[in-house]
Image 1 (tube, one colour):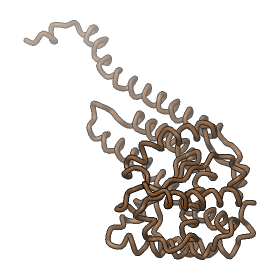
Image 2: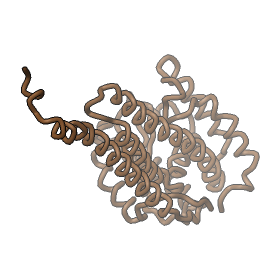
Image 3: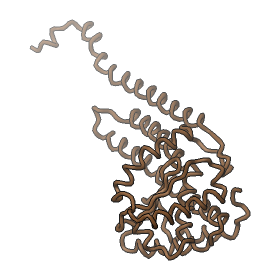
Image 4: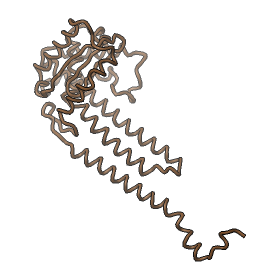
Length: 287
């Protein structure tokens, strides 16, 4: 005879249901916490709306311009080091600085009041240019070596300046925090450590969050193309050379381009049409 059979029936009745309560209660708690996490993330994001006087757009940004500048200045030495440091030739540095300063001083970019600084990097293998928040702009020797004239360099720098004045990095920070909050809420609501099958749901939620941010990255690139055309034209450079830049980048990436859907940069060939449209509508550029 088992020990359990010796327990009085009324005591077994009281003891029996209790084993099921923790699972149900913990599930309810997870849902409540998940809802709270999602609500906080959404309210925080929607409460960060601000107006960009340069682009005329409303954006969701939760850091100040001063914080953007500080982030960029702090990250600049490390980023330069990853690309072999600064280009040692002062003449090359001088050309990059001159064209960058000319664009900022003679276009709508001057309204942003960011302390722009332009750097040529010694890396002669990696074809790249990028901007940090707050106005730190970089271009590698490898990309400089592919460009044929100063107008094309102005197109590249104008594109990167466009990222800065559109505050794309700050937008991405806010979007990433929102995405992390929402995906965290999904994971919290669906993941049960006692049920291994829910782990896949959590992984899918995180993947969706990553793909959302990649989509925003491609949209940012197209907006930077448009602003780059505007800024270089306002500074007296030939905006048609931006099309040649895309053709150069397209040729340089043959055979090693990742699928466009999973790339933060749109296929250069697919950007040409948008650039042509911007050239034909320069009157719509921010002033």
